[in-house]
Image (cartoon, rainbow, N blue to C red):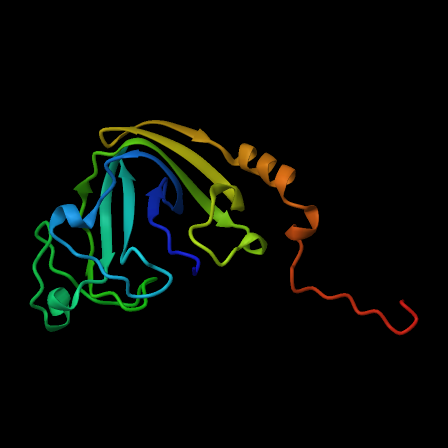
Length: 186
């Protein structure tokens, strides 16, 4: 399986990947009448969300979604609106989205915790699924109750400890760096 595009969260003016979810209530397109289809091997779910914390409250800011053939009227400007927003099209992380719903500001009544991460360590990339939180330099655990941010805990040090325990130090170096040795081994 190809590495998957993560949902994003804008928090304290930074864009983070959502690297872990433990809870209920994040946006689910099927609960809003959409039938997402995969549009690329990097997005088998068929959609990506961008969330934003505004004044300690979680909102869905943007939905990028690949729709079924029946729903692909966005190209002709005939797609249905979602929360009063008509879809648009532009270059996105999902190569062939059918619809982009931007500036939604939809309250997401999520309860639980999110691990949000920034500064991915490229040498730790594995071409499979979503990348786990320990593969990022900066990680925060955000704890929500019905969409309201109750607590933020910096987990970056714990993630660094995990990396040190489980990943050989050599993995942190450029995996494509080759050392030339002549015939005499020097």
